Length: 206
Image 1 (cartoon, helix red, strand yellow):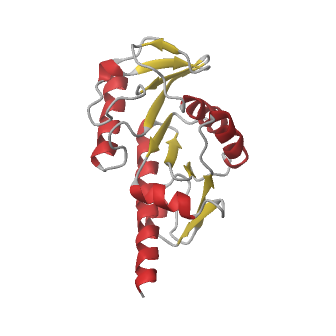
Image 2 (tube, one colour):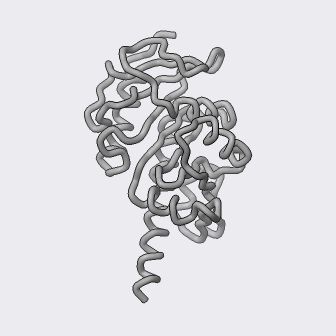
Image 3 (cartoon, one colour):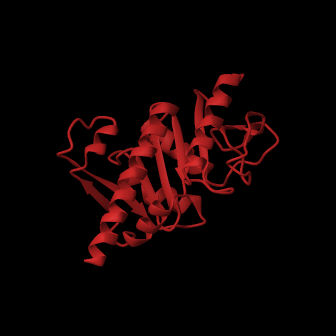
């Protein structure tokens, strides 16, 4: 499938926007957009590049097995998680960030297996939520260098997850039906995580 310049430019713009928020410093994070579903192909940022400086010609295309179809870069080992998320949720894009709040809280709630957030107006930024009087639980799974282990750990929670989950000591995976929706979900979830961390810090000072 021929990738349009618009698709490449839009993904780069999203990556740079998240980088400017401090959510994917250096080579941190990985990002993908679904190009087609049958057979599945993703447009992705290659592994090992500075996300604040990545440009459209550096993006790679991978198949349903994570093999690079076009582009000179290497696919991240975490491509397997992107493929699993897309397959389980029918997401149109997957964005993985390394914010301070997401990284710290994911370690804090690792044993509990999830972070519950409730009563915040910004919850309405997530698809399907129409009132602040609700709660979500973001799943938290333990980190591993084995993508197979991570995939097995998150698989039971993907269907009910609020368009995101956390890997302990690592960061957030967020998704949505499109790149635009995915970016909105990541921004909302990161906001809520930051609010929760700030609330914890205030409570500890009391």
